[in-house]
Image 1 (cartoon, rainbow, N blue to C red):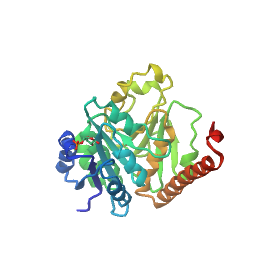
Image 2 (image 1 turned 90 degrees about the vertical axis):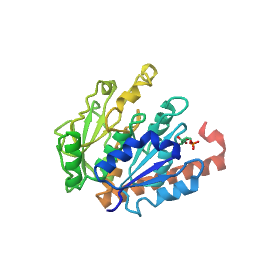
Image 3 (image 1 turned 45 degrees about the horizontal axis):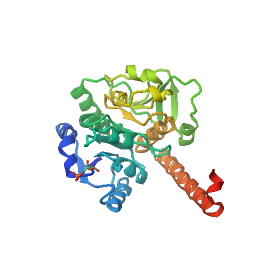
Image 4 (image 1 turned 60 degrees about the vertical axis):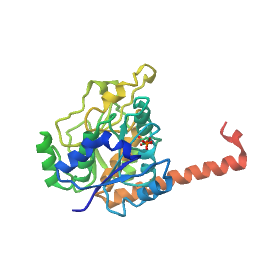
Length: 293
Ligand code: RP5
């Protein structure tokens, strides 16, 4: 059977910490490719293997690491397929890894899980790779006792639940993704853009859908960082606090697996981000740092 999921860890020491991820996929009969690739110790190899993911037919990569956990972020930088980021515990707890993985710069998202939520990482990855495979979706829903509410449409579309009545959807228009806002959930990919109320868990956990959560917590000073972990209690893709654009880009990466036009547009967008940085660097070299001060 073709392997559509890659699972990369930064070290063999991470493997026992995420064993539920391997076990869950094995139990469902979903093949995966396990790798040990370190963002810091084997940076070139890690990057090359990330660049080859699309060509090798993978639909999702799970990246698990602890501490200064750059593995997921650097993998996302080098591929157009969605990355499921799984933070694992380290000597200082694990919030270090969670924040390193979730708070990606605008343009390069990860779908982050809660600390050590290895089975949820497997569920999320399985949902991502089975959007057009009702056999796997049915297996998932009977194993987890969840309902399948929406199937993949023949046009790329997502559902959005949001508190923001002036949501900027220009990125979705750019990627050619249709969307419905605060209406019936008619897509298996749903973005929840919520303020502090996200903590009270308005996100359903009994539905076989890919839930991307993007909290817009405004009062971050008084927001307990430990609550971030509660945000990602289920198999949700958490794309960072105050990173609404990244939730839309992550949806584009997921749909890009099934709609080549969406993928092409995402690649163009990513290349523009690259060119923008090159241009900024050129300017700082020509005009000096005062240009930006
Ligand atoms: C992280 O540092 C790895 O993902 C692992 O969690 C940790 C230590 O690796 P080892 O020293 O155990 O090989 O980047």
